[in-house]
Amino acid sequence: MLLRGVLVAMLPAFLLLSALWAAGPIPDWRQFPNDASMVGRRTSRKEQAPQKFREYPAWEYNNFPIPADAGVPGEWVFARFMYRAVPTWSGYRLINWTIDYPRSDRHLSAAVRRLTRIQARSVEEPVAAEDGDDIYNWPWLYAVEVGHWDLTDLEAAKLRDFLERGGFFMCDDFHGTVEWQTFEASMKKVFPNRPIVDLPNDEAIFHTVYDLDDRYQVPGEQFVYSHRTYEKDGYQARWRGIYDDKGRVMVAICHNMDLGDSWEHADNPEYPEQYSALGFRIGIDYLVYAMTH
Image 1 (cartoon, helix red, strand yellow):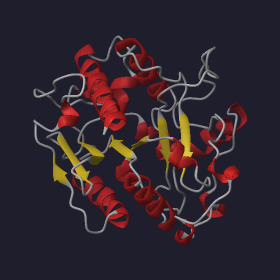
Image 2 (cartoon, helix red, strand yellow):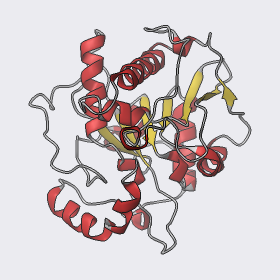
Image 3 (cartoon, helix red, strand yellow):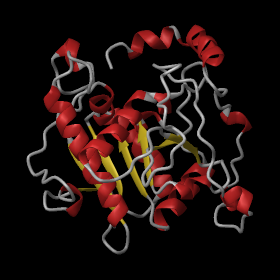
């Protein structure tokens, strides 16, 4: 988004206010475990239990209204992956995983309810690899701004185990060559030997509910100001993925596009409807694919 650079300079004061407004503290990654040997070991029922819904301070939103039916379970839940970000020049790690959160998450959940027969939970679930076995309770996992992630050994190992057990991971909102290189460096920690490939138009993931042969680049909210669909040198949308040994897409990579913003700004009259319309269709195709493959 165009305004994100301005927000960086305001971040210290913003984080202080966020801590006062939000329900939970900002995760301190220095205090998190990072022992990859923990992955795959036997665990207790307590560690296997799903985490309760909680909110965290976000880059853009705090005190976002919680729906009245937030406590009602759903067949599908928007699970947002909490990752460690690359350090800034000062050594501080920003909270990139919270971009668009929770407005984007709740808008997609509402669209799933309206456009399908899937009973989606009205609120999202932040998911951390370090929270015991919680990640395995949420088979559809989404991460934003992965051009800024810096996965720890534990995060990479847990994400790999999650995917090999049948989980599905969708990532979005990163642009250009430099962010691709940052993304790829951490993804190679997850799968050192599995190639990232371009998904063909006849791939089933594009045809579960909607036939999406004619896809186009979905820009972020910056389009309202710049009138450009691209950011940085990410001129062309790339629909990529990683397959498992049985030919299932287990990682869906949306490069040079911002589907998260298309969900977030679906109720913004200045953001073109055509982008939100395609963004919702892509999200629904991906999550239905995840639930049926």
